[in-house]
Image (tube, rainbow, N blue to C red; front, side, top):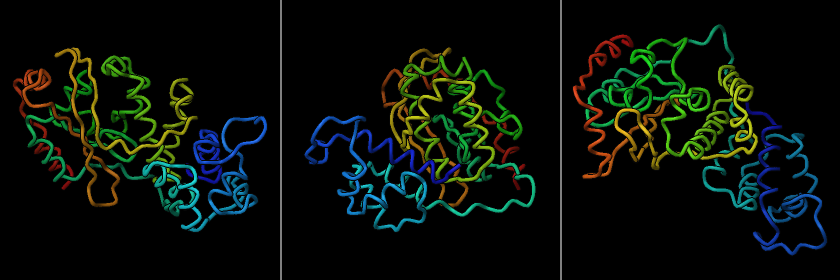
Length: 294
């Protein structure tokens, strides 16, 4: 998934988005293409134009940390984009596979945690944005049209990014779909760089690129963001328009799992909507799902 061409593409796109006046460079003459010239970016980063050109062309690998950091500063990258540049420029060594990859599962403790949150919609996401588990409120909020037990079946688990672009129910769920779509692709770009050589992730990107022109256009722009907090606008079939804050927590292990939780503002209509959505909630699957992992 991560290779020198990905690095070159990212550098070209970010360089093309900068104008000379953005970084204090005096421009002379007409420019055939928008953005900074390679030699201008190289000058700002303190590297030779030849070396920078080789980076963009995918002909140089294992750049030093100081060089990557200088290029990140020259490109005015955000913290998320800077971390992404490091992931692309210094990718992890691929893990040698000795057979078919084992299905991923959420930890029993994480499952027990989300099922204890009876007033908070919560979803556990895997390293490809697949759903590894949800509590009843989380299921009702993001995918009530799917069977509640679907995350337990590795072969056909829901994938939040696939659903966003290819599932009509999910598309209608988000009041600001375009914003949600860009956020999903930006997050997927981060996952792809941190999980190189993953055939399932490569297959997901390929599938979405073929089936969704909107995904293809967004992916080509190479947006990058961790998307760990913010606000989502739902147009829910049961409780109507609901605005919820979200937080993404990452366990302190190497699983690359993420815990996505939604909370309404206290005393808001959204809080009433979540209470209505949670009517008759129980968590009958918590014990069974946790026991399955022991």
